[in-house]
Image 1 (cartoon, rainbow, N blue to C red):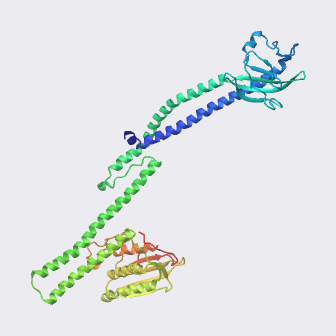
Image 2: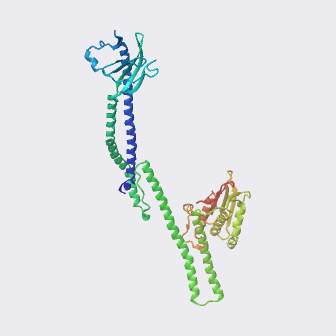
Image 3: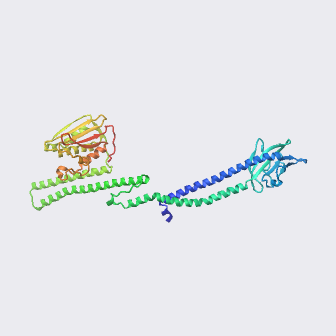
Length: 476
């Protein structure tokens, strides 16, 4: 359990991985270097044997008794032949031993000749003597005074193998020490490299809902700095989301409180004393008006909530924008008649958009309703539809109201936002209509913005992509 806990630390895992990889690399390197050294020594021993066999060919002679002998006059000193390390054997083609030097003694050097041995060059191979001594053996076919001979000359590889084993053992014994030092320094380096991450985690652990404004320090422009930047951007989004949630909750509670208080006060006053039937009908009408206001507010909140969760699916059809505008204006005609306002509807009858007719109509209803609310009695509302050269459908709704100051234009689409906080809800609404408009337009791949008219008032401008664009699911 303790080891498992320690392995959870990334610095420990990094050190172990580094040590394992380095250990495997050093092990392969040690074996490879030792094997390469052994191969080179064996090749060098073979080349020396080939050179020596040429010397031996010049020293062989046939004695008066017909036996093959090796002349001793080659050495400057008689003692030098005693330190000669060669193992020499001379055979007849049939395998009869004609000569063996004293160092070889009675041991056989390679057994019976194999077909083609030593003919056309040097036959080099590895062999073992009867006592197990490993040797590097070179054979050469030679004719001495017309007599065919097979010369075999070998050198012991015992010293080479001993050197190989010593080198390999030394490397293997030094490997744990090297890995231990590497692991220690690797752990220290990993701890130092991860220190900014540890500090970042410590600071992030102190960030709470009340301290979302805290940001992580960015010390270097590296991967850790990039990670801190990403965390800071995430914290900014979270802070903004929580702030919007707080404001949304407070505004929603405020919006609900007013009609609920109105319902309760109207009901309490009506119950304080007896009233006539007409008076009760007026009271019930007032209560129904407040209930309708609550219903509209709940419906708007439900629509925005489902939109935020991505739970609204758009039923896409090709819709004429002029017809959509007429339907929306028809629903609001009684309101315009009450304020003696005039509606101008003009534009391109061929303009089409791909989208959900229910939500698009709701967006146009909200925009025209907004224009009715803020236009004065006897004012004019203009709805214009056109197609730009790129095929985008442009719909504008212009009112004749007081206009929107530049500092408020980007905020009018926020939920529960009002330019004039003192405006009552009968004229100002709940502040959700334009938020729904923005969501609907964006869900259909378009954009919406507000501008100031040349002669006053506000112009809400919507741009829809060409009708060939297909939509299936709403997005926020």
